[in-house]
Length: 161
Image (tube, rainbow, N blue to C red; front, side, top):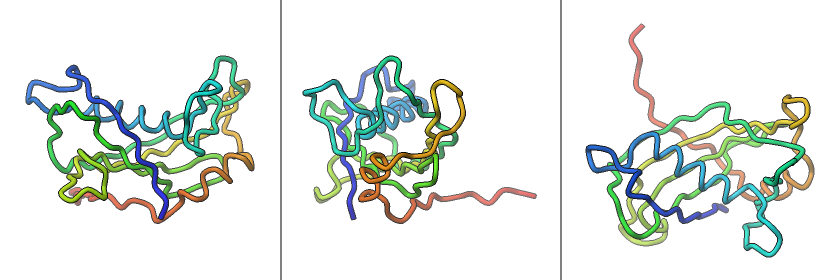
């Protein structure tokens, strides 16, 4: 089971009036981890082998978040140490992928590590010139396949009919 672990620093402004990370700020933490995991860096900057999407100006493709769902497990208060966002892929399609996340206070192998949120984002690859979805290329698929595993199952509340 291959998973990426991305440290993300909290900001004081991430907190709301209840002194925990606001739900909108949690989406930003997920975005920062996703960009670090999948978007390439300028030459010479360290990056995981999964960072194969061109993020530079004038890039041929873009990404579009088509869907996001979060289960909040515990309130996440401010801490000086970065949180650890664990990522893997629950689905690789032709032009899309489901990115699964766990937001933790510590790395998962540390005893007592708490899970604050679990989430799934469906990300679609888009051709920049046409604005339409584009197929995943061989380099992207090869870089991401080792991180493909069972999708994250989130809790669902029964909705009244």
